Image (cartoon, rainbow, N blue to C red; front, side, top):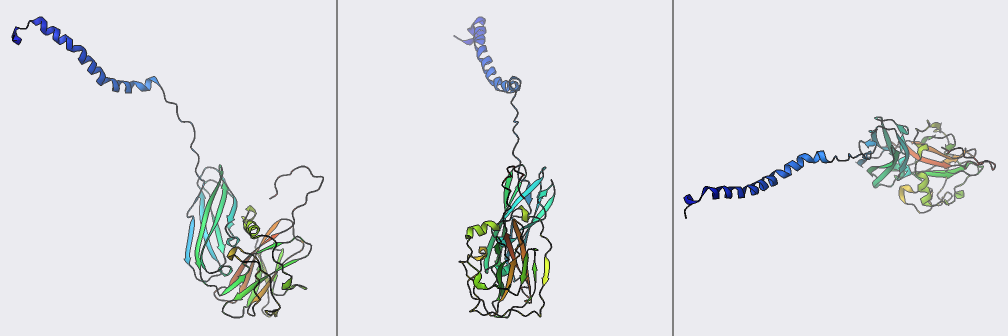
Amino acid sequence: MSQASIPPASRTTSTRGNLPLAVVLCLIVMAPPALAWAAPFWSQPTPWKQALPAGPALAFSQYAVDLGKVRPADELRATFRFRNTSTVPVTIQELIPSCGCLMPRLDKQVYAPGEAGQINLRMQPANETPGEKEFFCDVVYRDTQTRTDRLTFRLHLPEQRLSVRPPALIVYQLSNQPTTQPLFVHDSRGHQVEILSLRTGSPFVKASLTPPEGFSLEQIQPAQKSKEAAQAVSALTPANINPPVKPSLTPIPETEPLPETTAGKNRSQRRPSAGHSDPFVTEEAHQPNEKIVYITVVAELPPGRHHALIEIETTDPETRFLKVPVMIQGRNVERPKDMHQSHGLRK
């Protein structure tokens, strides 16, 4: 039968049978865009209310200084500049050097938002053994929390012709008598050492080329404190952050007769050395071309910890000044027995 012979009623029935299928396909195509458009009206997302943690407040211009191979010098320095980039004040609580020879210095402790400052690390080449060195200093500070930044100081030290030992002194002044410790200035070229003057950075410390009455090098005993204890007390606390007091100059006349000693009569006992971190006196015999500087801590020492910097002026053109840091530990403050109340922390 041909298509022309189909009745009109049969054509209408076939067209109506395909209509539901077309509607379903249309709904499937339109459903995703419609649902996406209507989703914001059905539910509102909960906003994120937790604040992100604040970043470190201090930003240093550099965290490492590498001087490379340096020439003989009196003193070498590394300067680390920083800025408080936060909106809160920053308090630098402590400077902890890997070696007390670094003598870190800071102008003040509290820095306002946007304020800049700098930390200086200083070391004396004459106090160190030659070769590659790497030191560091940890900066402990507080903004909204306590943080620590590490500053690194690298350099290559040459062979020193003029040197001083020990490189640092730690003196425990717990008696009612003055305490004396010697420093030995040595010239590896065999030249006679000439000392022009001495400077001390504390009114409680005296320096002289003449030994105190009744003093002899045989009286020096090995230190009873362990090396770990010596390293602990060399860490600088906030008390050392403030600028040092202007040193008092104690000149020594060039015409002053120098004490004559021999290698057989002058010896000091020594514990094993570990380089720059060992502040103890050596056991090596006093050499004829050495000079001895006698460092005396007065008996009337206030309680607590004190610091000094011994500066030795010489005639050597390469190393004009030798510097030795000194830490003095006095008696602790005694509290009355009937005192039961706390009056805050001692600074």
